Length: 577
Image (cartoon, rainbow, N blue to C red; front, side, top):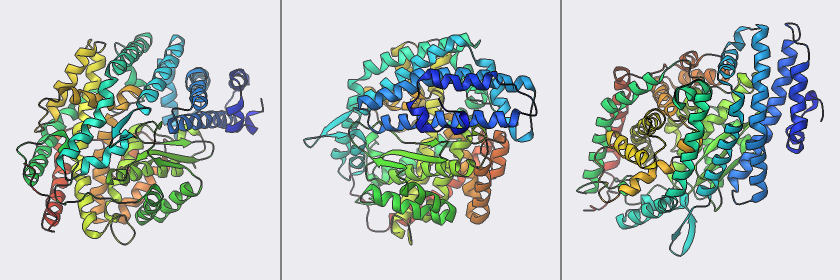
């Protein structure tokens, strides 16, 4: 194997584990002092950059084509065989650095993470983590192969999304049931898969000295600045403040549609127009217009997005064999992000692209930090970047460079702000459910899990008629890949949404200043504690109802005029009693 100073991701891609292990052992054995530590850190960072880029490239290739056995094997090789072992050796290198006692201000956050990783590491957990990675791959394989028969064709599930926006209510219902049916058919398989995940995660936690996986996850995710009790407080605040606002939104929708009650397939249709928004013809136009939109937020963002288009760093189409969902991941050696999503021609695709673009700009800005551990912050900050970009781009969806006409852009802004309320409801549900799973003592029982989901969902999701649809309502948690693949990765969206609303509020009076603060936050990467990162962006962490109330009031203040502006344009849908 080559020396670390000449290492590249391509060389790692072709290397066997003993060769990679040798590079870690080289770093573990060489003398380390305050005089040599900076050069040592630089070499270690390069090794991590090359290895993680090779692993990320393998993951991207597999999620883009889950039916390809060669891509699956390469992904498994990294995720199951290599990365857990590499993480073990990384902890030992971190221990060397911490024991040296070396520090400087820019490394404080990094060192705090290292101390946490050292504290929870147990050698007996390494094979358990490898087993979990294998189960994650199985989940992606199951869900990536799901299709639905629609008008004689087997379509990937994301391609049914446009039909949920149709004026014809019968079409919407048929599309909804078709999208849910594959999860109901594989429910037993998914439940058994989760049983194994649950058992492994609880064992991980107990091995590391925790009572349950929630405590372990908080430590592993470096949640130094808030606690499970803060999350419970945020759940209660959302129930107190957001649920009534969401109820008002649903009532306006029900009345506009002229329905006695809303069913789950009535939530995606625009009640103020007869035809759904279709903001782009194909993914080429989706990407090209997206570049112009983010350029309007700041020219640097447009230039970076053009770089991604030119270098082929986007996979936006929905197709058979592609894993569900969307993500942005970073190729740390190259300093390039990659966007993966499943576009189906609807406005939500624009939202997803802009959201993931926010992650991309974070990756571009933070790559100038010298060490890999200084670049990628915890998810609460990462999602602040993406969710803020969604709101900052709202005013640029229309003319002259956006996807929509001026009137259609008002529809899109209304939809986006209403979605803020719906998202907070869903976030609280998912996080409360995950807390129940790992702390109740019943999370290993499939029937108890399903009952808990229905109970928690009822707490946060009012005024939707689910009669006769209990099984379909259950399917929603099986579709939430975070619960399977990234446990406890969800409250970050809520924390970040509240931070993003604060940035958006500032942008309403001084957009240039708000974007400048946003860019300053992006450039810090992971070099500051979470509250300091939020403060740089002009926000603070919020968990209580008193701080939440004015933000939700602001959202409703903007929803009202937007609703009025789109209500009288002659495009009201027919009553659908």
